[in-house]
Length: 254
Image 1 (tube, helix red, strand yellow):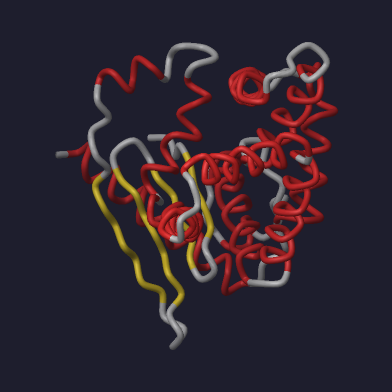
Image 2: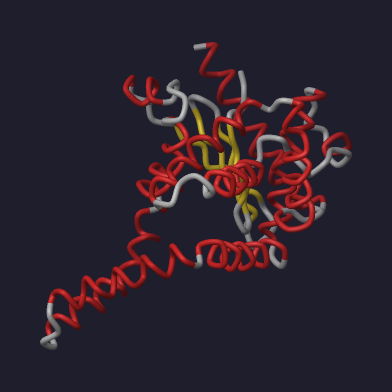
């Protein structure tokens, strides 16, 4: 059995395998709740796509949109309302299109500034909340089981909160690829899609040649996107991991 991923919340840690998802939540009264669910069977077409180089990286951006569509709706709904109101007030359709065109031009011209702005906000939220501590606990728990086959808190607490499979490393490769390709590609859409596709393939290689980029990703993880967890954060991550292991073993035995 192998754990294929994980994520952290403001009061929770989730780990998932091929068959199950295990979410441990720290309640306000201090108790830990476990929410175990069976994962959907991945369609053959999706399995095939995941094996195709350069294409599989794009799934990373398509799937979150499908899963958290409500968040995207909240973000883009005000824009849609603004366009409808402008049209109802007698503003021509061409004016609405002009607004969208201007927004696209701003994103294109100040892409790095916008990305830096949102990453700074994201890092601040993580660093000054429990999210960073649970993120660190997630990394340390998986490392302890992968390296030592142990979930004893005395072993978990000794692990680094830097993880080679963290999405932060992928973001580093995405930025580096974007920077290099920008010298050869001027179209923003083509540039972004190419950066995601190639950046993800580099992220999967995990070669020693690419070690400097992983060091950079590790530095960002340590300074910005994780914090040192306490025992209460580690307990949540361990509880999630243990529940997932138990569920997988029971499933395989039956």
